[in-house]
Length: 120
Image 1: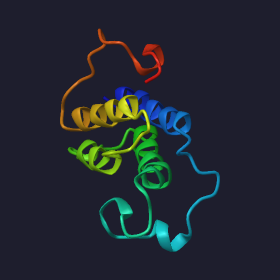
Image 2: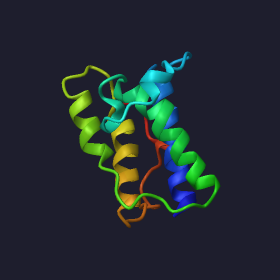
Image 3: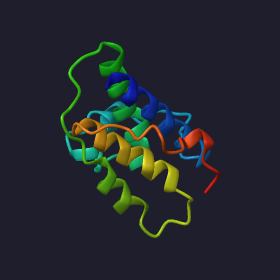
C-alpha cells in the first residue's frame, strides 16, 4: 500500500503544479502550526496539501510507518473547488484515490493513470 500511496502523492503534486497552485514560498511558521482541520484558519487547501499533507505523507511512506486509516480529503477538496473554473478533475481523482487507499481500498491498475489521461 505504501507504494500505491507514494504514486498518488506524486500525482497530487504534479496536478497542483499543473494548475499553478504550487507556492514557491512557504507560509509562516504560525500558519503551519495551525490546529484546525486542514489548517483552514491560515492556509488554502492547496497550501495545506503542499506544506502539511504531502510532506507528512511522504515521510510516513518513506519510513514505511503506519498510514492513517482514513483521510476524507476528497469531500474537502470538492467543496473547496466547487464553482472554480480550474480543470481540477485529475487532482480530485488523485485525492479521492488517497481516500480509497487509506480506507483499505486499492487502485484500479486497469484504469488510465493521470500521466496518460488527456488534459482536462
